[in-house]
Length: 257
Length: 340
Image 1 (cartoon, rainbow over the protein chains, first blue to last red):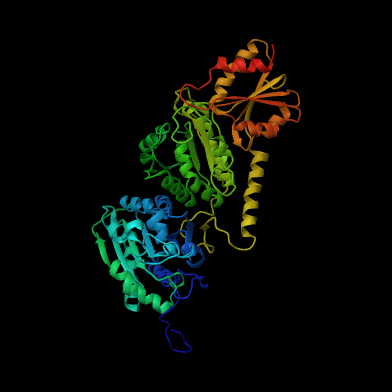
Image 2 (cartoon, each protein chain N blue to C red; image 1 turned 30 degrees about the vertical axis):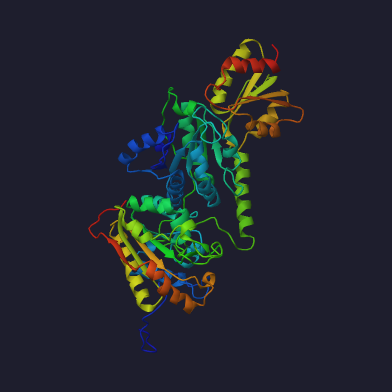
């Protein structure tokens, strides 16, 4: 309590975030997701033993925003890098933070096998249906018909295939302990997402194996929308294809690698 | 064995002939020592696991053979850019492409000229015996930790698979800098540890690259290793590394027995390259014969290193089944350039 004003501070920057401005575009959800991850780290009081693994894309600047040690991984390789870190630092809390191009295209092999080995890692997967940093190209998660700079006529499923549902795919692996999809397009969903991210970290804190949170998020700049429109698109177009929910919750799982 | 004695407890790899003896051995030995062995899903994953383990401060390694080393180049470039130590063993095969599994030195360029993108160097060691496979593995870890540069041990199926007497010895760790940069969780540290290779600020990347290049220059200054024999009176200097040097040594003995004044420079460090040794030797010997198990790669560095008036000759054959030269074959070549 502040003795001068008599008021208690109930909302503040999480300890695990640095006191800096981010470079993210207006309406981008990375800032929100960063905050939720930082709140989870604070919640379990593990900031001092947390190691982040950054991927390639807009989220590469993780090390400039989180107040934790960070390793930067090559494009798509964060789950392999995190595996190496975690095997050495067994008492560390190791998380990767990856976009959809990184995790669901170039890094498909690394994510599937890290999950399948049951590595005790937490993976935050930000799905905004596009490559944000490189200028809005078609991603493995781009929706059918969605126009991007490399699918100017709309994603054609006959030639480009279908958006990959990673949370469901990974839930099918024996090594995965927890796999969930959430969104951050409205306050209710943000609260749900916060709970899911906390639970994912809880799995790791309790050494219960591989945990995965897919977060549907907006990329207003590359979608060519203002932030409010972009939020609406998450609800109107993304959630119907990428259904929110828990696809695996194996609370009995013990002892990830 | 050398790796384990040097304190390496983390191995990440993927099967490929002719180096699978290494992961097989590590998978058997490491668990009992409290270490970790992972047979990764790919070479790409294994080099990145090495990157992660090294970033966390551990002595760690991977091994593979030529096509697999090609796959590791992305990770190697990131390790070089992030100044991460670590050991990579290449028991190389012949190529290009799938090629064959025969003794080959066709990966010389890939090993010493960077291999991946971005203009970096690795510490490259070339053992020519089982004893050196063991000794240089220990040295590779020490040099790699001291300079924070990945080290590559370059062998082939001859030195990688032969059985030969080995005198084991205790590993004595030299005084090495603390790994205060490793990620561990920030603990009570004020400063965050960040392992990265991205530098976007004005002038940052240039400064970073100059720092790397100063280290390469320092390696050239302080860490060159080579075997030089018979150079005092040599009229012809034969140079070869790794298993080619084994065959060359027999050929040189044959030459000496027939009264030919032939010496040997066997580079042990391929990077840093023993430039000064060639400069020195060619003050008197005016002919150099470079022998390789390829169509001519190290010979380019030899040409750059010798004195101005020295002539450099080359003998080598692209590797493949049946193309390993015999000592007699090399003796015939020596006789072309050196009379009795």
